[in-house]
Image (cartoon, rainbow, N blue to C red; front, side, top):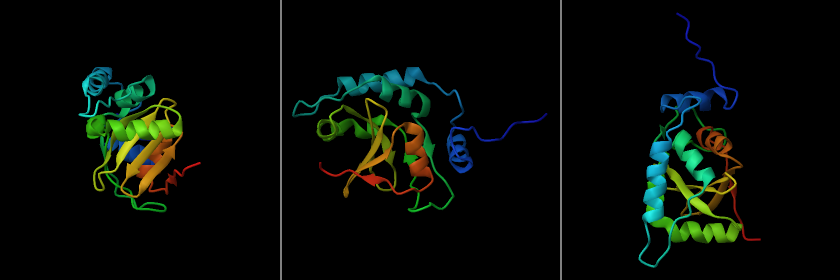
Length: 164
């Protein structure tokens, strides 16, 4: 019996391998879990009255990649890759921060997960662009979840967001 272990064309071989090791396969779609997260985020209100935005790009990213714990043994191209946990509830108490970022970008932003070593928050906007927020600032990871995962897993330097 022959098993096809080749990478998809969507990701490079090392990124594909890291995602598959975490449990991802092409066509993965757990909409039930994604809807659970959407409801949990919609129903959460901060003590100051801030609420999360939930929109199709976020729900789709959660359905395909949600719950994965992604690690890699590869060295990064420019920076060391960090393990990821793609669970939007890591951002449950960050509604105001995400709303502020969304306002600055002229869009809405929802949580996506976190870099587990640094506790940096991953976020996605209504167009599917992905960002990371940490103690040093806000960073752009890619125009879609695929580019963002490639940036993170391959250890590529993200682009710092600046005012203006």
